[in-house]
Image 1 (cartoon, rainbow, N blue to C red):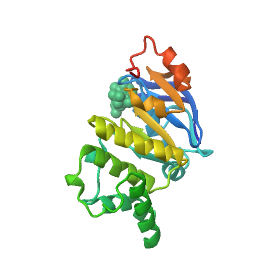
Image 2 (image 1 turned 60 degrees about the vertical axis):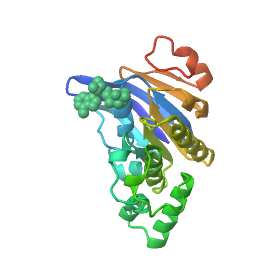
Image 3 (image 1 turned 90 degrees about the vertical axis):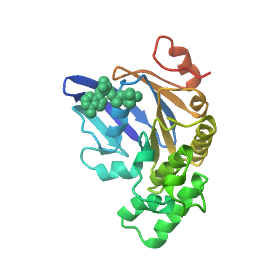
Length: 233
Ligand SMILES: Nc1ncnc2c1ncn2[C@@H]1O[C@H](COP(=O)(O)OP(=O)(O)OP(=O)(O)O)[C@@H](O)[C@H]1O
């Protein structure tokens, strides 16, 4: 579970988060939406200790992130914007193995985690392929597999559809749906609600660093009037 209480984050004179209270249960599929600059990326970076609160607290599975980042980083898997630029290895399998290797796990367990993660994103048997030969959608799926190999409770994806064409977008969304069905919590950060909302349990909208909508998708869409969010078509 991720619990954010009274979270304030300032970059110099800019208040990016202005008292955010948000709890995300294990297994929930949450869409976190809002215009550019509304604070979405800042919020999710707090969930695995990449930023420190100016005020308020963030807890993951009951432990304060500021006190123990390892708990947060194990429980919350992050796929950042443009993961296509962030690969650490040349091949799919080596990249996905990187995180489990850093945990110091035995070889057999690393191999099993890599195989399971590739299977979950429909890239099974392709571990030996070079990442630079993949399409954008396939690279996104490699990035998701890399996060999954850490066995997170929550998978958080920041703008996972940016730059993807419609079939690649549909494929990534389908993978997220099946991960959710298998019990992994999913948080998708986006300013574009189109097809993703139908997969979600809950829609949270940030505006100027504050939560302005937090509801089931069907009720939440009625509250979007006047907010700078692309509504689902
Ligand atoms: N490193 C930084 N230094 C200074 N200001 C920042 C920094 N990162 C973000 N900001 C500012 O904080 C506010 C929130 O930014 P944030 O990136 O969290 O929003 P966002 O909703 O994720 O936007 P986007 O969709 O453009 O990524 C914005 O006003 C932004 O300009």
